[in-house]
Image (cartoon, rainbow over all chains, first blue to last red; front, side, top):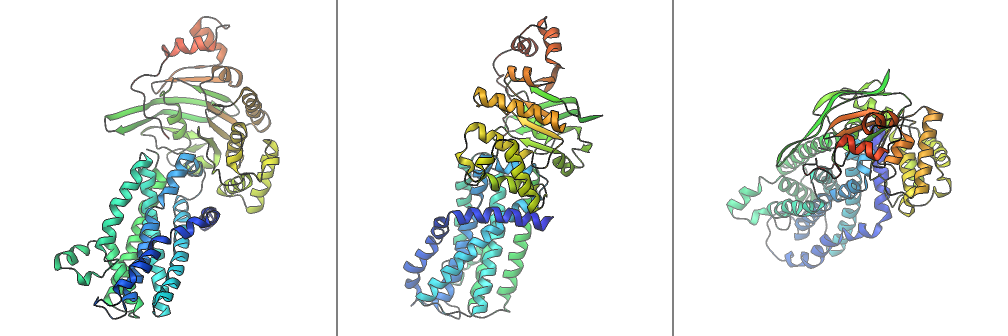
Length: 249
Length: 260
């Protein structure tokens, strides 16, 4: 039942995404601009770490793509709340977890496709990284999308007015981006900033993907990255499903 | 044996200005195959009541059973027994009518083939057969409403809840919808529970009226019985009867928040 329900919801939203292919490409624009106009600035700088500057930057851009793509995923929920579609589905016996998972798996699919395109562009720019590491990177993008997409949908169900949603999401995404060392590694940071950045879950994912991109698959960074990503996803999906079960107050 | 029965069903919203009791305690008993009209001023608790009975909103007090299923302990059973059309409807304007109908059938656990067959059947019954491949956004108001109802009937529910089903429709479309609702009851024995502000609609359609005000049932009975009891004559208008029962025209200032 649950698997069928999830597939049904996933299909509905995947078709929705495919209807607006333009939006699919547009989501790629921000990381692509960073790649083109920011990436070349880093090539000669001493950034620490084992590989080239591209092996540092591209993992950051991948997770940035996931971060911003998934954090605004709730916008579709807000639109569908207004249309009455969310309630129409909630009065059917469909699984509440499927209502959430179908949506965020669509988001994960879209963002992994965008991530593939981004990596291809990065290869043209000069990125060289082991294939296994690149694939691990995609897995982290997918996990991050499922987590943040769930929280975003939950927030969208809860906000009283659509106007609150954008500012609230921005208030979370920008600190998340700065404190996780997405653009430049936290190894460059003074002690206090490095310390502070450890409260940001995203930091562990960034460190893990950077390790993956230099072929270091069994490091502590990788271990912590996997643990944080899985724990975060579990928490977020549980919280999100709760909201789909009880919302309406 | 009643198909809907509620006992002191209540819902209090917590707001910044303190608790607001939208529904204070509703006792209802509806027989199978009845058409019930729920009337009341704006903010009386009609939509909140409907949202509780359809499992969208958890009651903060009381109990209810629908088609023998307990609202609190078996919400999934209640969902299988009910169809619900919200005031706003609920379709994606970008999706075709066929896709919405088939998806809805699948949400009610029909197989792919059953859902496709049911979509065709519903489109025939509700005069949507020529529109199946149009996008929902291109439908007229009357067609939209028929689609909303078709969606709610995907699983042949025993009970159909309609929240202000004819608001915004032209007179012809309203008359069509009344025929449709009567047909559902006559041919399939569906129990219909609808809210309305149109007293002519209540008069023409409902077997029995339940009038709520400030979250409680203030009167109930057949239209004629209510007219006789509250406006003094069986020939009185329902408008006079309604005003006599609720004792006022405009909505109160402390109206409960309208659920979206």
